[in-house]
Image (spheres, rainbow, N blue to C red):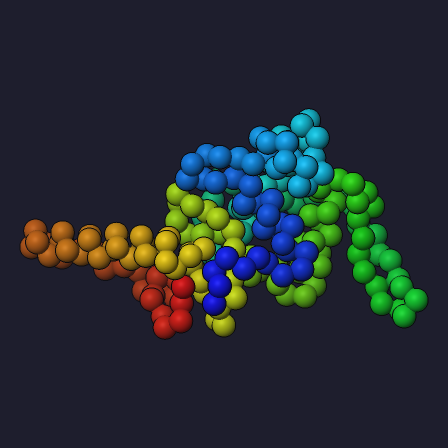
Length: 191
């Protein structure tokens, strides 16, 4: 499995927007002209795009069962001004389209509607690592991935757990056991 694959379909736009911020370094590609151009943003649109990005991150954290400082419901408020309408093609198929396709919020609303309809929205998740929070599309069969990359964030988390157990053993104390919830278990095939 390639851990760097982008999300399918319209979710690629959502994933790309949320991942404009590197949480670990603080680098924000929306600060650059090229970064803004990738989303069709003018400099004055950046504060709203950042609000939208962080509300999307909160929703992706919720998909993965993680807490956020923001409520995922903030996304609802931000998308309220991005109405969609139904279009019907010659063959009778219907689709939602943004009323104003030039705005980022409208394109995001369209992407979320399509992803909700096809069942992929809930698989867009944010990494469990607090110093990462990168958004990734969970392609695992059970939909239980916890990290954007098992080889980086997953390995770091497992190493911290291993070291904590070693310190507890060396001091003679018994570490508090990790909660035995599905998200805390290391299941075969989980990454």
